[in-house]
Image (cartoon, rainbow, N blue to C red; front, side):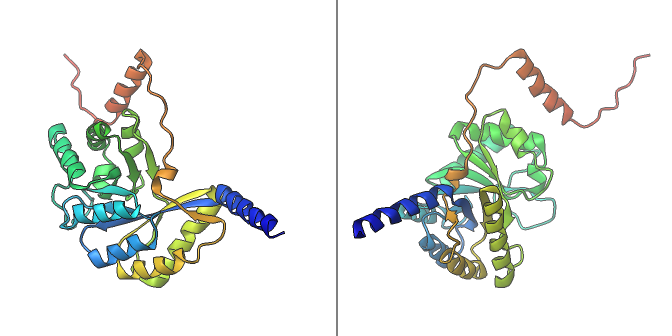
Length: 269
């Protein structure tokens, strides 16, 4: 009887894991707040950490997270619409391809064990197709996915990534836009509801003390139909590469042309 109950319990856990909604939690801005960051890493190896490449502890915290089993991504600084304090080597749409490639390559070198990238700020950059096209061109050499933090509605991330067959996922909820424990708790509950409705959700937060406190409590009391997962579990499979046809080439240049500003052409006399 005991053996029967044991196997029944294993079967229930397996079924629950298969059908549970998947919630990925990504914590940005790693590299500056060592104490808070180490607490977050300790909560679960399924929390994903996003490391600022020029932060003082970038290599150290990325290595520590990797050793604990957490997935690491690069929190790539990108230009916002507003006037905010910027990280070193923040990407702007008017940068040359060579400049963008240098910044991306140095970021990859600065954050060991990275499997993907997401944008730090970036409302200006991610809404600019040509700017993001240069980013994707630089990224495709490194086999990294892109998590769009969606700091602006009219993001061009997916459009720019499609030509380079780079996998893209999108943020569903910001946890700590308001830095109070009650607001963060409500946002976490919203992420859970979205996951239960859609089968998956991605929540992004920051290593604030309030966020640390909420995560400690919420992750220890997840609903039974929610599974905290690594971000890689939510990356869509890439379509197989195929030789471009004339139609593909035409579509590509048409898309690029449509992004150009209107030109005032003078009719020849």
